[in-house]
Image 1 (tube, rainbow, N blue to C red):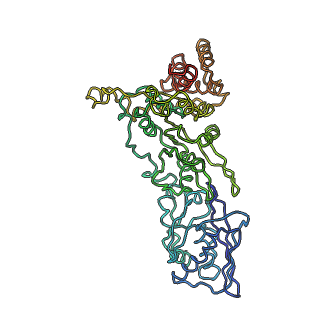
Image 2 (cartoon, rainbow, N blue to C red):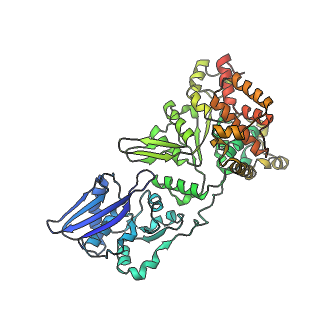
Image 3 (cartoon, rainbow, N blue to C red):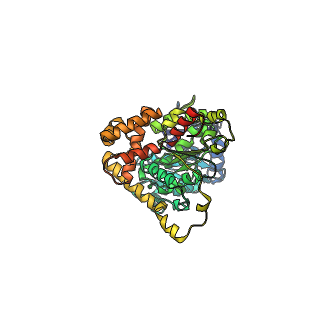
Length: 518
């Protein structure tokens, strides 16, 4: 039969639209043409396919070969279509039967020797596969794809394996692997975190702030002099956060697959992304000539830690404002328009002055103001918890005694994680979402306070000159504090503690008013 139809998947963001590959062989001067808006990388596939077929001991037809990639108006690039094109040529030339081809989709790059190589975005393509079809791809994707429930896959190492599979389909169809309903237990588990809050000496107030941030999914800012432990506190937050659900793990795996990361090695783990302060806007938000997810999408359902927050460019920081509210980011470029998930938790750390410790008076008032203004007010409004991390006294840095160790076991990551899990269970049972995701109507319903607390809260907000957004966010934090303490209602003590966690707002207010720290 001089015509064959093969199915494959393209990769556009974290979506994998179906691509139909039509191969037609006709008499005439030998030629190999690819049409259907192919990228140069696909046009080069004809040389890889020709060599792979010949080096596999098969016949490359010396005729006019036309390859059509449909839909023709959809951009296509990469070596992911090599295998599909090669199978299409073999089927059209009668070297493999065509009757079973509609039940399969193909994905993989071909080496000149005919060996199959992995491609980026394989997880997304497999996730889009219909239940009625099986996927044929490189064996190097086996661990990555083993976490997708009920996926039917045939893994091959060489093009010759696929030819043998179709020519003897009745005897070899049993080699198709069917994944179980649940991912492999060895992969679907949170890795043991090497870091623990037991390593942190002192800083009880800061540890409590990290606890509340993790329990309610609140954004967190740690500020203080160098060496006070801000980075140490932030790096341990992932150790007290609950494990990802299967749906969250699959969503993250799709993003990691498109980015070319090892999906199996980070399966089920909370992402912790820590970009350098020199990171470009594109690297932070995603995009580029060849699309790649940005740090805010790679941190989805996890933590985006921005160390030295004020050293990031102001323009880069402003790109975070919309994703922090919408939990997604829309990327519009001339070649594509994509929407990616960006449901991350922002954790930031910074010094209170450009020279580090503001109490040393090594910088002028104007220099400090310019430094603080790099972090805009609208961005600070979206950071629920802002805590000052002070230097730990030297006498507390000595090796603790056994008595002290026993006294600090309540600050272990395991104990804190248990509190976080219980608090989040309360939130999900009561309102169906975590406290950070409460909207205005839900705040009115679930964050009610008595008249005395309301008068105190209103006067405090007016004195600090805070916005209505901050008013609602402080109520959310107070609700989280009450949940961590297993309280049914928000009390005045919870409200006061929530206001105390807006320390950076108070610091900036007093510094700008009185030109010194009050």
